[in-house]
Image 1 (cartoon, rainbow, N blue to C red):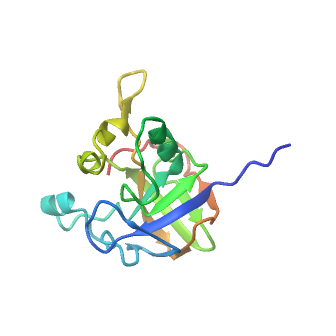
Image 2 (image 1 turned 60 degrees about the vertical axis):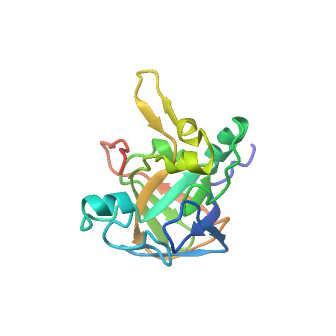
Length: 184
């Protein structure tokens, strides 16, 4: 029987400034109820600039951005050059269909960190500034014509800890009934 690799972390990234791309690091520290230590989006209240403009006191449901590296593979077949951290994610994964997880799924990452998935990342026009046509490439439609957003998921930190590339991820689904992910 072939070995099936466990879901894992491929890369970790963070950025102090509100820039599109985040720098790769050897590790990141997740802080409970806050996010990634030293990242521009760390905090109890929302830090995403367009959301701050609407309501600076709303809860930060976007403390951690996770992106499946399988999207990088898909984009490469379309001629895009996108790698870990390039489109703003903090944790790049492999082996998890992040987009199909229900809301409130808990991702146990490494020794102690736990991230609860809150929703989908809604792709923005900054993608096209990074590489022309990238926004359209991370959007598609299902058989019923519903929009599929492929730019990863957002989460909150339930338990802090240090996350390294190659850390394993254990997926803990919430109780039924499962709620599908919506943009946050």
